[in-house]
Length: 291
Image 1 (tube, rainbow, N blue to C red):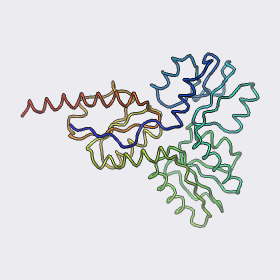
Image 2: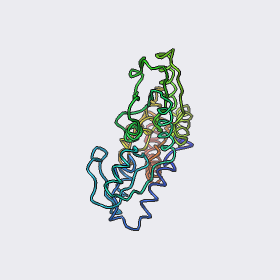
Image 3: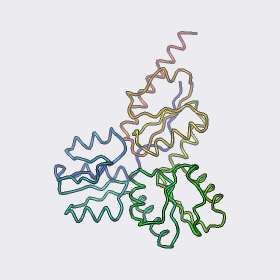
Image 4: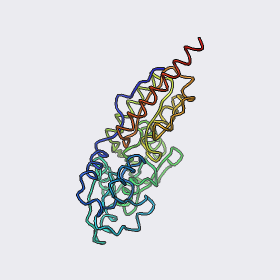
């Protein structure tokens, strides 16, 4: 069995920078993370081992007693930032610059008087941060079924930074179709690492019979990679660690691809690849024995 790795995969610079900030903290016992730094359990365990605490995404209202709060790469809304500062917290901001760009685009479109459409997951922390900075006049659209005639003369359209480019294009086309008289201004806010990884997966699935995608179970861009493969009729499995690989799953295939989400550690990718190589050798020996 042959294994082909995607040309671009794994951790983006925003996540790497956030993890490096954690690794260089001189006082980890005084720091708590405001939510999950990354949507990857392996990376979160590494963070906890440093003595840094963190709150669950749905527990952000209750603030840690620690004096310093680290803002994750997903960012927060302006009102939330003000709330934390008024509570006397010293903020360590690791918001990804590309996420800040999405926030700015949303605020600028709102300032133009446009009804802002955010293509993304309404409960995702990044989307909540974006919409939290908009006092009104916005709608989050997650699926094509969410698109309708919004009854607005002008619309602004942005995307959660980890949205699949293919999905974003389809959503925008549907928005134009459902709002034929509206003045629509789209702003491309999909981050380059996500786009490059999606393009690499699209290229990869033309060469393989099945795909393994490595990343956190809550990672949006990791799930999007698996969905892209499945939409092309390709079997795909989404795992977090090498231990989750099932050798029997590989039996029908001769060529399998490997990709990973933007919050996946390089060590984890290497471990999965090594395990896949081991499985391939075992299957090849088994197949030769049957001949």
